[in-house]
Length: 156
Image (tube, rainbow, N blue to C red; front, side, top):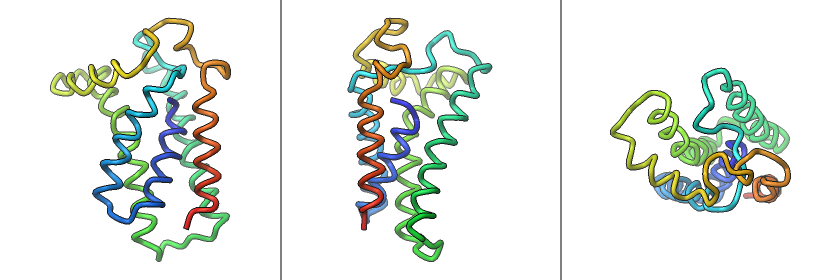
């Protein structure tokens, strides 16, 4: 899944669940469930730091959508608990990919069990045509992102 999909789904978990600990656990679990669905990725094991712009763009789109949704709804910073849970949902929905980055590019070997588990969830093998990023390979990203946006619009 692309990061935008994880951001939107994590925000939705945070918007709907009041307990921040439950939000954190459910957001991590949801990340892994979403990664089971067939999807393409824009990075692979050959990707280097030069491709980081793709990650930055993906994060900017996802966080920009969240900001636009809440700006449009008129959310205020005074609704601290609600917004806190949304940010917890976003953070923990991105955490598995963050640990992958720390293991893969930063060499933090103690994260290997999480990395191996995370990689096994992906149905298609690395470098297969099914893992290439394209509209054809990412219908679940599109569907889940749109459903999350719709649910966030009507949430609360």
